[in-house]
Length: 170
Ligand SMILES: [Zn+2]
Image (cartoon, rainbow, N blue to C red; front, side, top):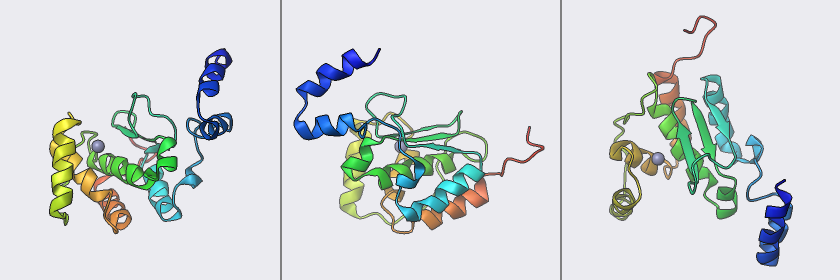
């Protein structure tokens, strides 16, 4: 049923994009192992704490990543791998996952993170033009996604804030 829609689209794309589309690369879900290796311990800890990580097209149009608090699900769009922003996107959404502990409401962690003035300016611009969400939680996620120690920071916060789902969980 999808074929008649996909074929005309592929025919109108440049050759490289058409080949990528034929191989399924920009839209097809990816295995979690496609993430940079140093992020995988964080992926495993998120899973152990009851979060789901999907490298697939998010259910919201036009976003690179998404965190769904109710489903405890992190989405990273496969296109971010081609754009070279998969790492930042995953760390951004992982930050929102940790922010949602312990009660499922995404709230700022209160981290004091170093932020260069130019980054502060850029984030301010992004937040005023494109984001309707909580400014403090977005700012934390944007700053953290670029920190060299983002993984240990998130692992520590995850262990401290997010309860492990147990056999007696209600
Ligand atoms: Zn965000």
